[in-house]
Image (cartoon, rainbow, N blue to C red; front, side, top):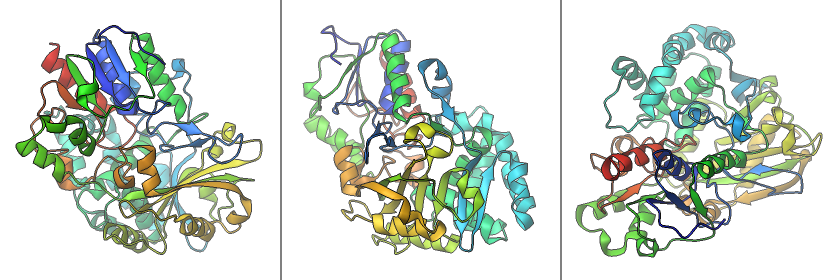
Length: 477
């Protein structure tokens, strides 16, 4: 796509969900917007490709979209009219244990609680009030962290429950099933489960599971990016692909520039425009662990031993709470665990279009030390085989991307970190630097709109929308 030669009011660099959200928000305000993308294909983390065999469509990065189904940015777009169908599995996520057992989140809080035996009451007491307030708290959680909350009591309830480490909150449960279920979802934080705020990750994603489910996009996540590109085009926005921006000096004049990049790329792009405290703060920004991702083409559905896993769009593998916690602690310490915690997505349970009839795609990754070049597809396969005997017999082909491959694919994935920075307590409060407005940089008219800004990683578009609203208030009011 080649842009017109006319000048733009605002330039956005990077076409991931946040860059697209920023561009759309600016264009809705009547500005002339130009978006520049280095890759030949827009979309960032929302791309789909035949990574293994013809006819097998794999999501290159993001695959499951509870936040796209619930964030204020995405709910403000008529996705169905733009060709997006969200397919919601009956089981949002499941966590198998040895012996054919599993715990799972399905439908309502009551339905899930009823499946947890002795922990039914504890689950109702913890999740019931939080899920009831999801419509109040989710927009607050996804808003700029320094904004004044509209529903302080509901947000405080979530904060008090979410602040402790996941290993502490899990003590409310007595059964191995309930504890492991929470450990698996909390490990999306990519932090040791003994770290503060890991409970918040688990609670937020479970709240979304009960409120909107954990849907996949029919045909692949690329259709989500395609919908945003169509929305931008309808608003008059221009998109240029295949152009890597190496310096801010390469950009044409504009009143505002929004960068869907991490602090490391901002430093490189800015050259000598940054100095002093802001530069030092950007250099202190911490990135999290990487991921090693494997995509499988399968001759049939995964033969999970536990029935609940066969209906789940997402399966968390790792065994007990203690095993998951040990795995994440090893990764944080720079060691590769023997039995890694793995995330597995199987879109074929609700979207048969991903593979030829009767066959399936499988998306899986595990956390690895930052920048690891190791191919750990073997341990990932072993964990799947552990809970689905016979899995290896179904593999027709596979594609592996190590943590270093992930960064090569997308420079924002520093060291393979797909979340744009570690989600520690400090970086939750001061993300990306200790500035009152986290989207402004020290360069006039230049803003950060990536997942390195609040509210952080995930396909929700709110980093982009929040940054664009800051730019509108600062430069176009």
